[in-house]
Image: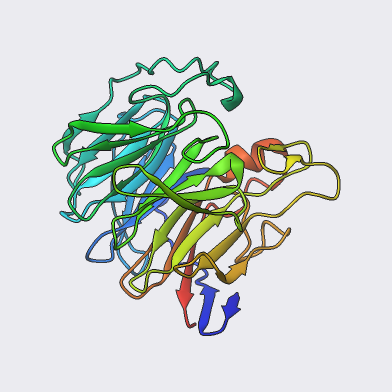
Length: 329
């Protein structure tokens, strides 16, 4: 449970009614449409899974169309669904039923950044779209913004019809530089918020990529979204002993930090924050990676639990990969 002032969230146990035979070891992202349907993008046999607001299974689609590295999902104002696939170096737009509308990037063709395929510090330069893109957000004028991500150090801005308009970013820790631009969201003023994950900060830009400011009271931020009051909700990964943060340096014994969820006001002040080292506990996290809010401000958090926890001996195989939190419960 999280409580700070008037903000109080509680886990809704058993909300997701996953069909028999379906599994998702990693839920890379989550999005909610205008009718409060919940879309998960998973790494598994059923990439996109859709529920109604009560957690009843509606359908799945995308079988055979994605790599094992699905990454993010976003519902556009017109109801179409954007899916990022960092394994295939593409961002694709679909109808809610899964019909392909547009593809950005060239399938299985990464841009030339010098990336060695494993380590973000091997990236030598920013380049065009895409080298393992991460997430999508759409601005007030319909422009499409995409973070590009594991193999690049850039943000790309496209027109609503998919024409590249501008790109910004390069490897580094200075203003407008990135070490893994991972999550992205646009506020009501059109400002672009980018989770600079491995540098433990959220950078803020104008709609055309001019650096404005940054928030640093955050830890390995993976994604963010805004509510109707302009508050920012941010998922934050853990730092484990043996990791190396670009801001904190090597994570030695005693400096590990658990994964968590944070809510900020418009100025970047923390309003609520929760998560404990007990990763299997309801309301705590193994690897929070994506999030979404519905019309009642209930919160959905997706986790790449197998990739970051189970495969590394940090959580049991039955640890949660998706949680719903109810506001005011």
